[in-house]
Length: 338
Ligand code: P6P
Image 1 (cartoon, protein in one colour):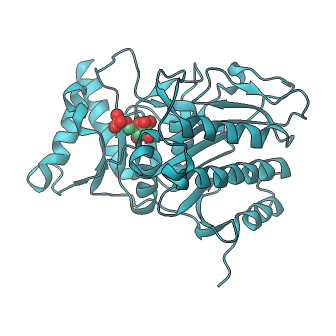
Image 2 (cartoon, helix red, strand yellow; image 1 turned 90 degrees about the horizontal axis):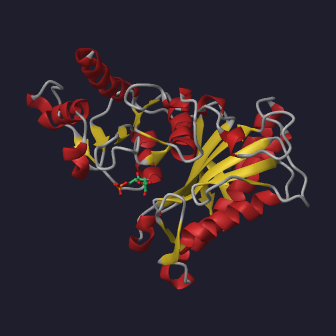
């Protein structure tokens, strides 16, 4: 059976009038950059790209050589095509417009070039996360402020997971679809059209070592998960935590679950660990397009009006029923407090 390639899928989306030629080109170019990143990642120690780059990023995190290489691959691939006005990245303090020598396009691209890169040196799946926004009309050299649009305005979002197989998971606003890289041909082939997250789940993903730092509703919610059959939830739960958002979210898109990175008191000045613009928003769009929910624990992630390119938020996303349950604990706590 011949599978639909990403190229054919995008052409058919354009023929159906759901996307234009520029967005089709943008997604094609991003997928090509992800193939190059996949090749670099898969070489491991043989590629001479493991370990630290000896530099730090705006987040104050040590950069891995592959963080820098992945960022450069995405910037270079998207500079000359004429589909983009500017890029923003976890690895760069400010956004960067396409170089003057190239034509400027209608879209803004944001990415975490290699999420979970601390797992690289121990050979655990990592990934590239990307989000696409429209450049505001009449703005030919966009600055950071033009990126500050709510996640509900994204025109596309996706990730590429570099695992046992390399997969591109993509939404253009009409469902969430997974493509697997066929390495000999170098094509992404459609392997999971219209992914649907099971509404209920018995699996949660969280870093339990932070438990003592959580606020009361988080303590109560997770305590009830751990109480299992004998507790108020009346069922036993399983836990998974890969510490690579792309891998944890891919599992949840595939078989359900809830992924949580809540606010904690470790650094009260930070609203959370994960970044809104290039982690929570794209993952939120992918999950909600697959029938799930994405919340801060109190409000929908995709409705947040951003106030900074690297803004952090608490993240609860996955199976609709379970995210709803976790939000109930937080809203009930807030009500009791008022
Ligand atoms: P922790 C990776 O650094 C990341 O940004 C996400 O990919 C992942 O879900 C989370 O942080 C892991 O955080 O505190 O468990 O190491």
